[in-house]
Image 1 (cartoon, rainbow, N blue to C red):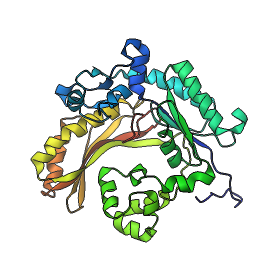
Image 2: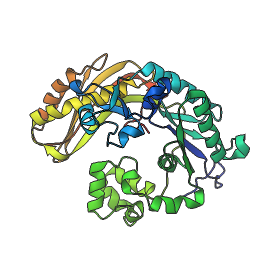
Image 3: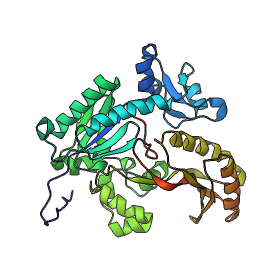
Image 4: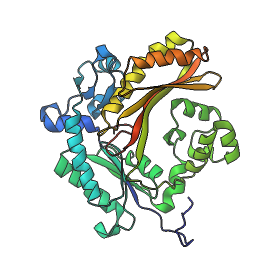
Amino acid sequence: MDTPYDADGLRAPPRKIIHCDCDCFYAAVEMRDAPALAGRPLAVGGRPAGRGVIATCNYEARAFGVRSAMSTARALRLCPDLVLLPPDFERYRAASRQILDIYRDYTPLVEPLSLDEAYLDVSGVGRCRGSATLMAQEIRARISAEVGITASAGIAPNKFIAKVASDWNKPDGQFVVRPQEVDAFVAALPVDRIFGVGKVTAQRLHRLGARTCGDLRAWAQADLVAEFGRFGAALYRLCRGIDERPVNPARVRKSLSVETTFSTDLAGLDDCLAALPALVADFQRRFARLDAPAPVAKAFVKVKFADFTQTTLERSVTAPDPALWPVLLAEAHARGARAVRLLGIGVRFAEGQLEEGQLALFAGDG
């Protein structure tokens, strides 16, 4: 892994990044506030009759195959005894504020990704004898004692590896990847652990003979860019454990969107409209998790056709309106009138929104 240089051109010491992620956050808050629910399969999500989706579930529910973003109807088929609760964002936000206060007790460089998940840059912090590992242990202990739920953590020299590591010993655990361990750790990672590699891209990489990051290193950067466009350059860096993004405590969100690439192309507009409610439900769930969102200025639909051409159509609005997206979709689809491989919907904010306490798209709720 390349070591960044400081302003004087000298090699800077590796960063110390902690990625903290609470375990099944919504469900954990529910079990904390109603201890009788502990030990029972529990999920937080929408009603099955309204095409609801699961926001998160506890580990007892996961034993039945229930997962975040799964339709509620399917979750209930997998686990008929599932306790299904509607989300209570006021309680979740209150817990989130407590957690963020704990994080900021250690460093001002806290980049929230969601209500319960954040990066912390503790490089140069003197607490716990300067040990990021000990700081992570202390933070997790404080979340347990002060908030009443558990959290897991990953400690590494950069954000990519720290986020992967935080999932290594879940629940209620942590994992450290030291600078000298980065190369071997990343080489063994499956390619679907790379940022932005979803199910479809992973299948494509597998067909090309790359199942691990080590396999992917055989590809030249130019070849990856030719195959995957700009994302190819990111693949080249990340499969080598290179991630120089700083922890940014005050990013401004300009939009919020969700999209799905389908394993089988949608034949026509009717199929696209049938796929839309699941996207709308996912968007509504994510929008509800935003902490004091900025005014909405526009709603948009993105359509990528089977030949990889794409179009985006937007309208000025003051709030997300589920009734508008089918209208936009019909008009956007008419521009190509052929099979569709990807659909996306979203909104653009008028002045941007600080990303504190919000959900990063496609981030799981550990």
